[in-house]
Image (tube, rainbow, N blue to C red; front, side):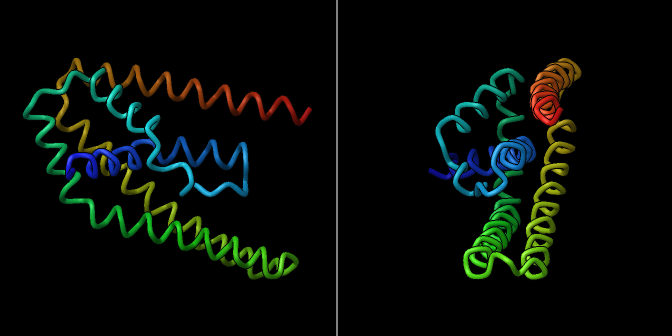
Length: 161
């Protein structure tokens, strides 16, 4: 059961930026919280780690990293979800109060920044435990992810013309 919890934390750390970009691009009012915990993301992380062909020692290091960082992740995620909830509530109560909505939206961005920093720290840790071959595989996976993101950017850029 603890392993599942650690995997879910990893999913959020690894996929947060891509999910956030997709949410922002496709549905500005969608809550990122609604996207978490699905089997698709669990499968994606398993695929990701399988592609890296991690050793048992590396898996143990990741397990320890997730265990050590779980409280910070949970806190940051909770802050993000509460900030998003506050914006949604403000929009429902008084949708023309632009000042309040902007202020609360800044809180969302601040919480997102904390998760992004946490994601960057995880990435640095991951790279530090990989072999040269695994780093090349990681680079290839990241390039594929970046290409998909660029496709989304291009798609939305073309729809404006």
